[in-house]
Length: 32
Image 1 (cartoon, rainbow, N blue to C red):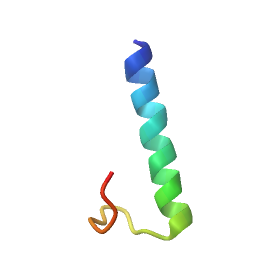
Image 2: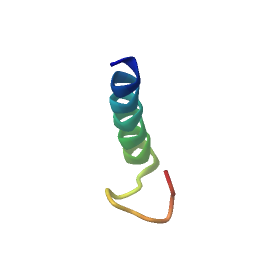
Image 3: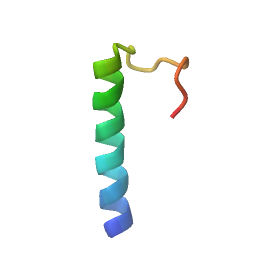
Image 4: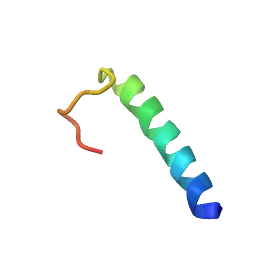
């Protein structure tokens, strides 16, 4: 359960980070 929760939080953080960097959703220029 903890791993799943961490995975969701990390994904949300990554999405927010991409938005802050101005990277479009689904961009392949910056690998995850």
